[in-house]
Amino acid sequence: MVRQDPEIARLAERFVCVRIQSMNGVNINLFQFDYDLTWMAFFMDADDRFYARYGGREDEHAGSHLSQESLARTMRAVLELHREGKIQSSRYEPNGRPPRTPEEIPPMRAMIARREVSCIHCHDVKVATLRDLQGRGQFDRSMIFAYPTPRSIGIEVDREVQDVLRKVIPGSPAARAGLRPGDEIESADGARVLTVGDLARVLEKTPKEAVLPLVVRRGGERVEADLRLSGDWKRSADPSWRESMHVAGPNAGFWGRALNDRQKREAGIPADRMALEVTFLFPNHPTPRKAGLEVGDRIVEVDGRREPMTIRQLHALCQMERQYGDRLPVVILRDGRETRLTLELPTAPSRND
Image 1 (spheres, rainbow, N blue to C red):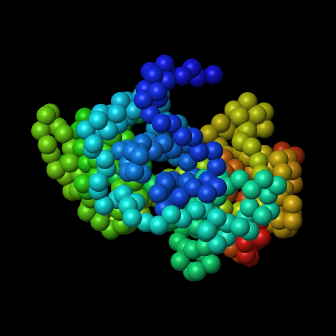
Image 2 (tube, rainbow, N blue to C red; image 1 turned 30 degrees about the vertical axis):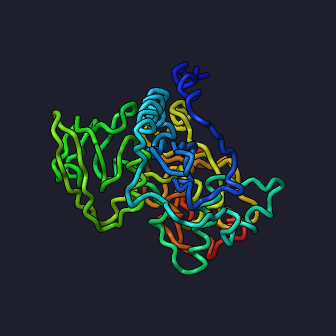
């Protein structure tokens, strides 16, 4: 159990704290963020204007940019900004938009009608939005990659001090713009940056092809840098954690678990190779049964790949790299022998996808 930093409790006494446990009735034209996230915080004044946003994650870990130290630091900074009346005032702020709730997204009513409790989760907002875009022929798989992290432009920031560059990735837009480890981000296209959440807000609203101006502090001096962005810079390597992934394409129709090193060794599978044991076949899903896949089979190859993979990553491969009706070759280990099977993915989304 993680013990709460007593400083956070002391600082919280100086805020009016509101915890939102569901998105029912929430103004999504005001509270805009990566709805796939586990946790997000907004620091605002009484007029619904923002001082800072706190939250965000890299693919590999839900808490990659969450810590008590960085939260307390953000709270201290926001109190000073409030004292000075320095709200965020860039063009990236959601000012002047009429209120809109998740219930107004057309597919939402059907989604929650199938539940015993009509609680709207954060990821439901994104799923309903993407389904609405699909219905209007405006969906693109790149929309899965919402609110890019600093790594998408070639920088890694300190987890505790999130406006300080810890690393600049060689060959990245940040490296080509001359950014250096130790630089302190002051602003991105005019928006103040205190946290990963602040920078992600700007990156979310930045087009695929753009020049993003950054201002950093380096050795006490103010340095301007223009990051030239193009292509799929918003795409991350492993989006399998995202709850909205299933909107993008077909799934494989089964669930499984990765074997540990001991289980691999007992099965004669090298530790650095794939080993996914099938634990459940989705009801009414034709793909695994038609292929002859059985509970207990161990998948050791997918589409020619044998590197370790989680079941979520296997589904992400289908959803992001395959189309409905595609065929996916796999190799299973059953009774000590390898057998090749072909997964014929569904030809269309099911009602429950």
